[in-house]
Amino acid sequence: MARLQALAAGLAASLAATLAPMTTADAADPVGVYTAYDGVCADASVRSAIQRSFRYQVTHVVNLPDVDIVDFYGARETRFRPAGVDSPIERRYCQATARLSDGRDRTIWYLIEYGQGFAGIGNNVEFCVSGFDRWNVYDGHCRVLR
Image 1 (spheres, helix red, strand yellow):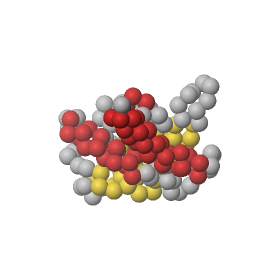
Image 2: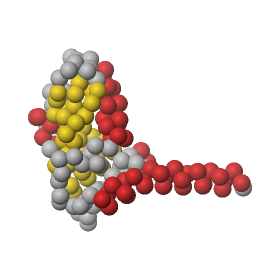
Image 3: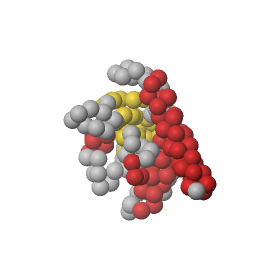
Image 4: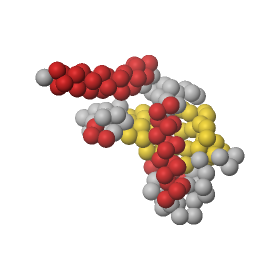
């Protein structure tokens, strides 16, 4: 019984830690006000998820240059869609400039979907780096994520 209580307490603490930064950032971000630097769009966990997925993409899609994202700057929110009756998922659309390991800068568009991570825990991040959407997954010039 003690093990079960310890497991439940650990899961509750883990879930609270995962959701706490998101709740704090949401409360601080006024709806409809877009700034040059947005805390949610520039969050380290979002950037890390994009960097990991980008590394996977350039390794597994043929004819893409073997580069990494080494830095992000100029992150800003371009659109916010709050959860509602017609769409129960809160979404933030962001834009930034990504510095690649070859020294080039590319525009990156990304979407943060709240509560859409694995098994509904955490967030889902979709992204498109201009010039790297070889199969037009996000339409021409990353249009879907703009």
